Length: 292
Image (cartoon, rainbow, N blue to C red; front, top):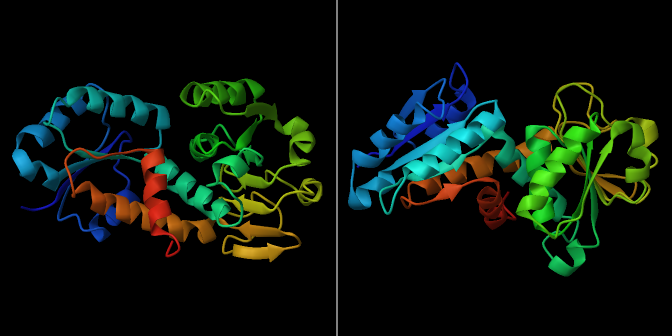
């Protein structure tokens, strides 16, 4: 039975990056659909559900992607509602690569900070720059789920507050703060981890501001396009020492992201009821350590 993956993308063209990774991960037949909406995804999902039966359902899976994260989430909810009983296939949700990238960033931070130790994690403080973007939101959600205190920084405090409120709904006991770039210095003072997840080619943390982050032990910049999102960090940095801190650039995190992505695609074909969102992708990545 061939492994068939339906790549359902909300954009006008399916993402070639996601397609290539799917093939490299062992997908034997890739069916690509663009412009997917909550209305059009139902018959596509039915096609995946009803063509095979029993144990053969595990040989069909769905990948949900695209640059409009909110639209992908709406489509994913529709897919969940379309399944019933054992008649379902495994699904991976990774809009704009946000889930796999955020998971890889959290794993990088956990190599140097006690993020995975519940009692110690509650004493950690993280500042996320560009926190209202796709990756920033996911990283904030994953860290909050670990018990880490998270400050979400955005040009718009209202948008940061809205993101924090959404995460709070999922993690009621989480410590979340919303602030603006204009008030950044206060947040930097005692941050253990600073993560830049903003738009490509935009500096979010200048050298002057970085020098004020006296307590920071890990800097992670997910921007691969000059100028750096965090001044002084190279895209190729991977656990690079800089004073008392450790630095990661986009490519330094990207290797782990790729391993998570490929492993997740492969795992879709091991059962017909896997649902891989940010948290599940983080678990897959953690299982890959230290090879990741």
